[in-house]
Length: 63
Image (cartoon, rainbow, N blue to C red; front, side, top):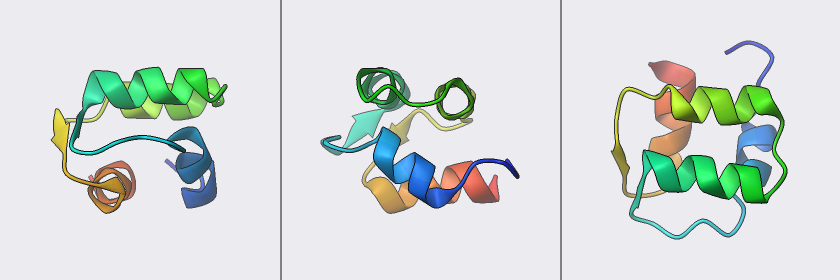
């Protein structure tokens, strides 16, 4: 997603504990008052399970 930065993603997932599923990522982003574009991007990830923030970032920006 071109208008989403890695920093936006990091802020949205601040305090997230891993491993985590997609729903947990979305819930965390909402708790952190993330922009809706971040929440939407997380909600539409193809994978459902992530072992750490690097896997989330790779899924968001590479898939």
